[in-house]
Amino acid sequence: TRVLLNNYVPSGSAKISDFQIVQAPAPTKEQLKENEVILRPLYLSVDPYQRNRLSGAKESYIPMYQKGQPISNSLVATKGQPISNSLVATVIASTSGEFQEGDLVIDGGGKWETEYVARAGAIKKAPVYPGINPRDYVGVLGMPSFTAYVGMTVVAEPKAGETILVSSASGAVGQMVVQLAKARGLRVVGVAGSDDKIEYLKSIGADAAFNYKTCGSLEDAIKRAAPEGIDIYFDCVGGELLDAALANINEFARIVVCGAITQYNLSSGEEGYGVKNTLNILIKSAKMQGFTIGGYFGTKIQGEFIEHVSKLYDEGKIKYRMSETVGLENGAQAILDLFEGKNVGKSVIKA
Ligand code: NDP
Image: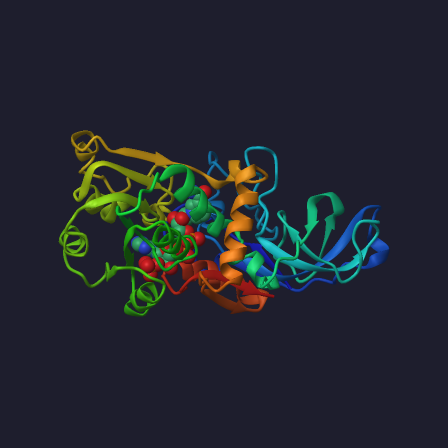
């Protein structure tokens, strides 16, 4: 099974017909050149940035998928390193001395195919950590979880006793932000799009949480949940909620611009939501800073993240919920589902 891009979708919601599921013969060992492997993905990451790669935009921070070619998890980070932990696979055949049949590996350039050929130099063995199962490489140790860690440790400048507001709080990034913030002694307010998600947020330690779809005025809902104001806003959505958050910031607040999913279905020329409360950044001497995770792969902080988070996870001190879509043939739908909020926790495909 291969999941291919059928059409570019410059704006609006992508549809299942924008993808094509085809059957193709699996590669054979005889076809391998030197230092190549055949991989069978076990778990693949499904992420909001993939929407951008469907757009066909001429200018973007990430390369577009190609029509008629498989959807992939490959992303080249700024340092020329592939972004890892997006796909975990088993080696089926190998002409490399480094990899044997049966090895569990991580491929930063993985394709959405049942079996495919990869260069040995582009993959790495999945390191063994206590309590970590194959799907955890794309889950609790995956790219979005690392994003939460970098956002909290490098950008947010958290101090115990402060209040943090987190949007898309039950998602892949958000659930980790909530727990890292609690561990640092912050008061955490989570925002999500269903009552089920709100329950989950409370179960992982959020002090307050509300459903942005049913709360009425966003500005008032934040005020009720954080009467003392917001010191950090960890923004995954942009748009109206960002505006409402800005209306509630305290002096010296930090706004961490992690994502803006409310704007991802717009084409590059299209007018997005016009944020009105930017003057508050000035009045409150606040700081607003974006970041992309690409530049942090292969750096010291990634090692710190893995050590810190794998230990907490093994000890049961953090939870990491996942939404599993079974079968590569259903993978395209999993991308669309992110934009309907159907995932609770990290969206993954079990191939
Ligand atoms: P999530 O697991 O949070 O999944 C996406 C969620 O977004 C949905 O479940 C839904 O939750 C919410 N959502 C979808 N459409 C809307 C909408 N129109 N308005 C408000 N919420 C919406 O995804 P991730 O945790 O993987 O990513 C979260 C954000 O972080 C994204 O914006 C992503 O692009 C960004 N990101 C940034 C990175 C970086 O390097 N800066 C790296 C990784 C991710 P709900 O039901 O709550 O609405």
